[in-house]
Length: 575
Image 1: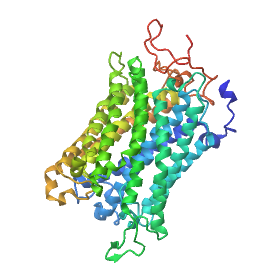
Image 2 (image 1 turned 30 degrees about the vertical axis):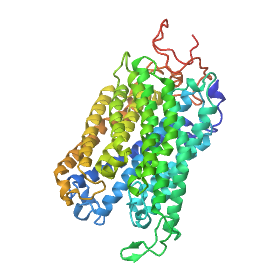
Image 3 (image 1 turned 180 degrees about the vertical axis):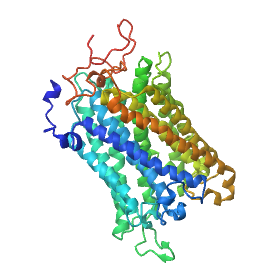
Image 4 (image 1 turned 120 degrees about the vertical axis):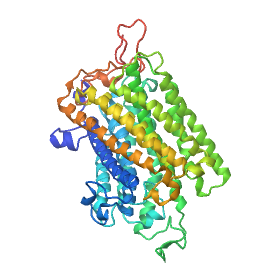
């Protein structure tokens, strides 16, 4: 019996089972709950920001009076606190929310099950990755209460502003912990996927989701070390008097900075975007893997272009390392260099289109079940398409020079990450919830959550395209201070109202999630009649996952095979 032979976890008292657990399933759930809470906190910061943008200079209702005069004098958000909220919103949503949810939660729980493994390759390293991530996140939140407050230099932390602004030191320390956590996790994912597959599970029999996690792990492993090195250099600039990023004769508040000289602010941009562009695919590849799994199970037919999807993911991962400077067209690079990054950016759009096309073609001729997870997967296709297409003008140097740092960029990025990645992750929560807890989430409230989220997300982000094309700059504390912004100021009110409604739309999900965890309708081990291995073990899976090690006889998506009794043929069933 495979799970009885699995003795790597040692004793199973309460602390070792639920707190410092080395079981990949418990660690996956730890990541799930923690990242969802961070996402909620980051979203609350956004709602405060949206009040300032919609009604600049007016006191924030309810919570304005609760904030200190340093943060919000008279209940009105101060410019420095506005900057801190903006920087922390971006940091929390990306590094503490979406990445840990897509990789730490879904990857940890689902990947070993889908390859028929009893656990991750290095269980204690896995535990350590979570217990480095959580203190990093808590330290990030703690910075709000420390002297100097939280970081105020945006999630990109461009120097020299980030070197001289208060709050940045704690941000850097927290980021070092978070990056270390990701590196530990990526090593584990790589070794597990390549070495712990069940007998018969060749690389071309791995589900798309496993391939997505594998490519994501490579991206994290190669892209994060440069950012970690860059963060250490910035940390030294702040505390050790070095000058890696400070140019000569830098003047702050009328005085020349003593340590400044010889540093290059652009060095940070190169190192940061070398990570941050692959990071976009770290955000989106797990989402694409989830959508592929949901579509296959709910159309009752194989994924169209399985090998093409995998090839496109690998190509995307490789190309993502040679396009980073398209974020820096306005930094003064030569036209020849700009053209190189322009061309590579256009090339990388080809596999992205291929991926989306394969997923859309997978719907053709399918017997579609409009379940709650399928609704999220279907919404992902056009909304991610909008996010991708609106990125093309930002990859062309001529149009990017006009659109750079406008609200158009904000709209494009959020269509990719929110209506793309997060909406797919939400679909994944509904899809695998029965496996996690042996119970189902309520379908009615799931659909209420879906429609409320999709409508409100578009209401929040689509007006940003119009604002950006009209020349409204991002990171403005008071948009009405510039006359050319006044015609589009009503759109700020529209975006803000939809943002607050989007928060209301999440209440059914929060209630449904926690209520169903304990009181939801009990379900069988394979409620979707899906073919991949995670549905071959009990729900929730026991210690060691499988009663006996499964043997894999076929590819991951054999649905509606002519001559077969059922419209699904699981990977582990021989006949």
